[in-house]
Image (cartoon, rainbow, N blue to C red; front, side):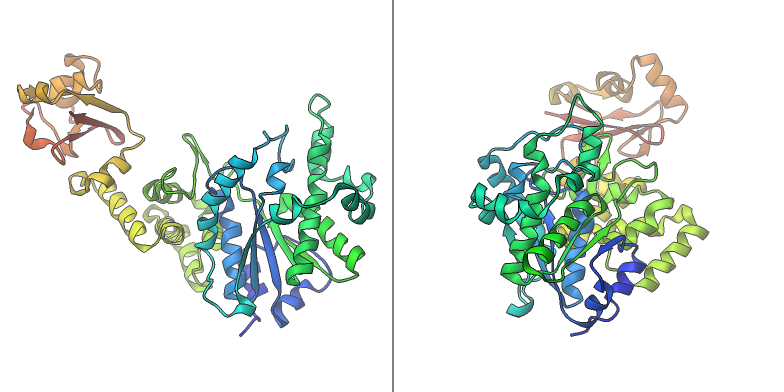
Length: 427
């Protein structure tokens, strides 16, 4: 087993942001370490905002360290105030149980459970120990180690106290103590000595390090990664249509592929480092390609493909690539039905009567009936200007639509201009 190079790799990938505890770099390079990362079960799927931490878990294991993933079934009952302007809605135990069942296989996908016992990863739910806590004992054994003066200086608390109309409840205020106790419990149970999280978790991580030092007189460490933002500085993982999920039923592999394919040149280098396991030379080569021939979008295509493989596997990633290639090469007729619906899931859709088409219709009739054009005059003008495509073939004024034009015996793809797609189905 070899540990040297792990810290160098994290630094190359810009993942080493803040550290807590003396000697963490040397410790990671000289011997195996057990480390944990927590995941918030506020939904029945993780989203791409969790992807960096999932990749970090795998990097830990690949480097010979032991990885622990903590699903926050206990802390999820409380809610982390970090990054929030108001209190999170509290979930009941049934909702949390359902959410945990959804995210568990997503976490497991990133870890190898077939390794020997001393390096086997661990997936635990912190409700197993937090819901068994006795209040008086907790306050005596944990609360006594922390000063309220220090706690109210944490960024997550300060931001809420600056909003008198919102404030912060005692329930949320206690979250940082519970997270610190998580670290102590994992230290006692698994000799876990490193907690990793996003930079917004740094204050909570420090409290866990401090609790182990005070309560057990042992050294523990913390490490944070940077928050991931889009090129415009907005939150990563959000689009106009909502959150980008890791569950294929919520966000299809094609949609996930497209999300990363649309990455801006200014951030694609970071994303390649964060979300792929490409070696350093490959990433540097893609950096050069982005700088010298950005129009080819080599880095974006590689990023989208690699992430899709990680989240959904080779087969689904290949399918997403084929669908994307068909869309951009104007070969939508080559798509299978499931891919066709996936590709145009966000396009305006209209359902028409099959019998209506069987009676014989011109393309002008279809454009008006499908509400692609507001009038027959407008439709004729668009066709004459060469701006209308039927199943990605340019239409002319003589075009009629027949049953033989239907893709999979049901669909027409109409395009107005370069990107304005409409999907019409006939039932």
